[in-house]
Length: 421
Image (cartoon, rainbow, N blue to C red):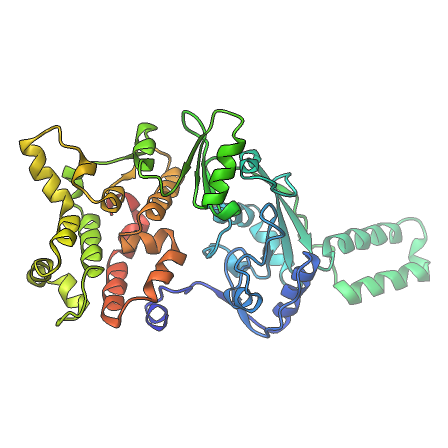
């Protein structure tokens, strides 16, 4: 991952943690029922997740108490606006945006000498079967201070109020209690420590529960799309209401989504977009073996691209050029079907979210489309980091250079307007 790190494309927005912050973080872990980390330095993202601790514990989701109970840790106001690198739910970053938007000032005050751990409570203690995810709608965010600083403040204010009444100022016991409180917690009179619970309502989302699944609930009827085959089979077996249940590998999934106006496809327009060119280069890259030119040079040169395209097996060539072949054949035969000419994975990769969807739903559908057919390395990097890193480790140095340059050249454009990729 050295090249990605040097290009600021690998976990570049993490906060380094050391010293007293480590102790506070460990206190949060213990309060949540987890074991403390033995690391003396590590880094955290916007929700308090640490890649180093995840590696130490050999558990990517070490901040979860089961699939139904996720948590967060805030030890510094610098976590505001940071990415959530391994969200358990697709809305986790929105949860943290709400937290910092509502309580930014309080968090800055509290984390001067304390840390906060969060419960994301959806009123479900345990998931028993995949369809339980249908119950997941309203999330209540509960806040807890590791040293009960908020409770100490209430006690201190109560003591001060008592001290100021009648002749209680001469009560030496009250004096001592106030001194003890001040020594342990400082002067809490003007600290802003109140964090009332927050409420967040989900709509459509992705969750890693049951091996990964999408819940699309804001359409004609609810749609569940499973990544795990066993969970899919169980859901089919236990279906009790009008729900469309699909597996992500279903060949007709894109058509099902199109029928619900969730995705659309326009090949005539798509072939002129840079996204299509990236997909073709990616497909050629995976078809090449023992090249005499560096992969990066082949993919960036039109003449070399054509040269190597004509050197690969005819079946691979047809797969890469399937869209052009189909459009040409359709001029002669308007009834010809896309799936009869275009490779299934390429065809899936040509779909885009329906433009009428809300922005957050478009992001969710982009993620789904990338999971169905991860052939655009820019979108894979943006929407499915784990898949991207998995593929990245298999590439040679020249391929890595091309991928990094492609991402860096498009990153700002993708961030500001995802619909133009």
